[in-house]
Length: 397
Image (cartoon, rainbow, N blue to C red):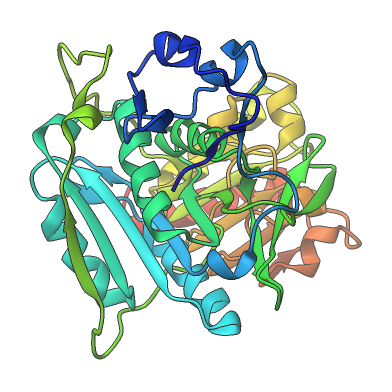
């Protein structure tokens, strides 16, 4: 897919673009200039051309939507396993694809075991999985991965590209969007699609105080990163009809100024998104001593302590333990809220929990609208009582 356009009437064949291209992608051929596969859309030729004869071909309103079809999901791997956010993206893509008769495709890149993981994706209703397996892709290097995924996008022309809003995904997605000169909506919490294939992307804005609805109407592909744990994971299908396509990793894709000298796995504490049990302290918890009281209940239940945004702003915890639009989205089996009022910025990011227990002395608190069990009482009586009860049940005096 050529996205660089030359104006033959303006071009004087001075060769400045060929000379200045940092990737050697331009060359003279048949009294003209040809763009090679190594082009990375950096725009150097556009800026250097003295005749203004070079431009990007894709402009607002200049594309044909019918040429851009299907969903393409970037499947991240973590320590050799498929990151679970990929299954959530597949599930959401399948829902949207059924509305516009699109296929669901995946691209997966990495070292040994990548092709094997690609075959696993077919069990979840994926139509095609493009696998790039090479030892040079063993560790994540943003430039190499961008080249690999960009090649797949250029060949497949997907209408939408979905990427998990992980640390890796947040590094990769903007590079791809820049490469294709199109829009990116980051940290989406809701996705939908119109009959004209414009994707509706909803994400928190202004610190979670509003929910922005965004559509990319004048360019393709549409890029979106999606938060982990906000969508239902795809379920396995009874019969698989998809196929795995093994793609070669070209030499130029392996080249990078980044060299991984050493890779070391650092064991970290369990993220609150992965916890089965959470106890959340809200503004009704007044001081550090009271926070310890809630933490003791969390430990007794074998879970973690989390916080609402006001508690984080008051220095009681770090953002990694914040539940809400400006923090994390959680779906534990059990969540107990202590002194949480229940603002929409908080409840929208924990509504998928299997069992919600709310403790608040205000019978009109909004949290009771989403809770399965409502305890209208003083949390300073209820929390110690629950902690002691749990310890007795476990035989831990």
